[in-house]
Image (cartoon, rainbow over all chains, first blue to last red; front, side, top):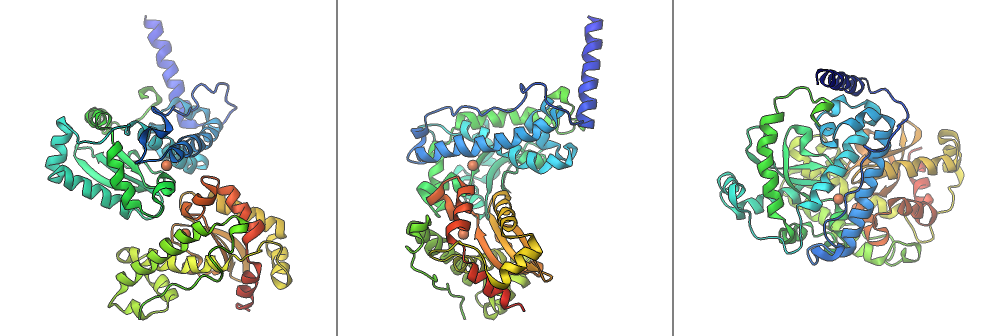
Length: 251
Length: 201
Ligand SMILES: [Fe+2]
Ligand SMILES: [Fe+2]
């Protein structure tokens, strides 16, 4: 047992060292490369809020494209494959400079879209319940006030980006928007839910009318999943916010 | 005096045979470009900027945290007007005359320019623009994010391509590289770039 712990420890030390040194060498295994998660429902399942062709292109082309580019960066630095993409985003300053932007954009693109598919569902909508409902009520005054603020933030994000409901390190709810594929984890915030306001998310159905897309999107919101994320955000903040070293061992 | 939307230099269906549809213009010119004009006028109403040339509005508001909305809309009004003129029916082909000579001497030839332009347009992550500019007397290929344009960097724009998704999603969906190749092969207006270059000398 002792020997096992020792070898485990030295293994961790090696993982730590390689993750700090980031020596480039050819990948011996692609096991830790990222794979496209399957869409949890049919392409047409979210219509009419989101049409089938948009879902297909969005998942099979856009999300897949981010993964191709992310994996190209991860293949260059196999040590990065020991960490979750989320932890890479949290510690971008520790990622080698020549792939940092690629990880930010494509790692963000992967994490954002992976969440996005799960926080939607056919016949979604309604309202949040439980602790999330209470937190929304106390933070924004009412569910309707929250919706209005979320839509407004999504509408004002100029160019490509996302609008988010996040928790801060004090586990308080906030609405923010980010540019391009930037994820709230990059600024120490935990993403509870996010809506994609890149034009590819809505152009086939809504064209230039982003406000209509944001309104229609509530009908496919998967509040069960969003509430789960809110509950786990409490663990996230107490476990990880004050931890300085994000070693590969934690992920 | 309000800012107005310049008329399209060709019929909205004129590029249809070259893979930019009338439907794209219906929204790109009729909705997106028009909205930037409306927003700009609303934002500068009853301020000194309402009477400035639009280039001055762009340069003055750039980098001013209180004037982000003015900058974004003014630059997008200008960029789109410039973009419409950067294309023509039966465009494409190769540059001639002084522009061709300068492309050879500054960029290593037309093929190199096309390669550089394709790369700039394809790698602008998110919304933005690809440009051919004159920078301190030399030709350069650049890209900018969102509404930003070469005017704020002291460069002279000669040609542009809009790579916001709204520019190509109706006709090409996610296939931005195809949209870029189509622009260079069938749409680009080298006469416009040559005129802009001539105006600098
Ligand atoms: Fe997206
Ligand atoms: Fe545009």
